[in-house]
Length: 51
Image 1 (cartoon, rainbow, N blue to C red):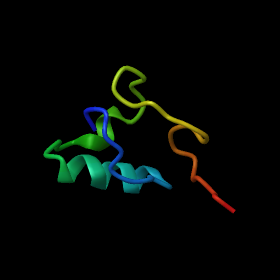
Image 2 (image 1 turned 90 degrees about the vertical axis):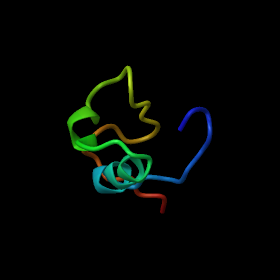
Image 3 (image 1 turned 135 degrees about the vertical axis):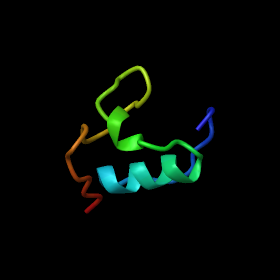
Image 4 (image 1 turned 60 degrees about the vertical axis):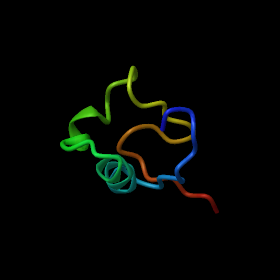
């Protein structure tokens, strides 16, 4: 957030929780917006498996 790493989201649910803690309500509505969310590895709605 704002250039700082706040954690690793392994699912949509994780990312929505990070955004909620940052004060953004309705975060689940922006998961598909490439101007607001930069996905690395898995894309939106795909679980990330670090194994």
